[in-house]
Image 1 (cartoon, rainbow, N blue to C red):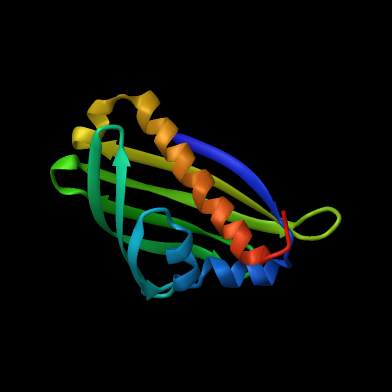
Image 2 (image 1 turned 30 degrees about the vertical axis):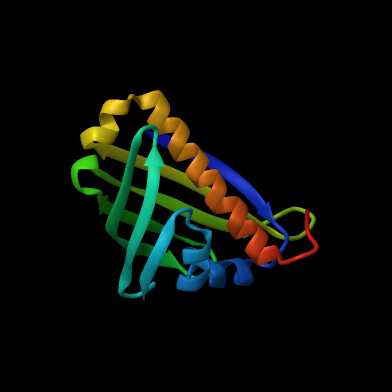
Length: 151
């Protein structure tokens, strides 16, 4: 499964970059995340509980950052295991650039794979779920970075 999208965030690039590397911001923005520990340098450990169709699972996983260019972007890679529900693994390239008229363009390309019971649900359901998760994350992230008062 692949997703590609761009969001314009009403904040300067360094503020967006700082938020992308802040574990507390990431934890608050990841839907279903109950725990996120670590650092950009060492990698993160996360616990996320989600329901995909009829399957509810708690995933425990590791996330690492590579190809880090401060203020410009990085590659994020991770894998989570959800017991009998299966696993999810994938990565994303995240790039930042100055937006026309001010603000920051945040562009992401995501690739993900799932296995186990979740994979048996069918690609349309899984793709729809993954798209919704990404949209929720970036909506929350944008709202956090822009702060109150932005629509």
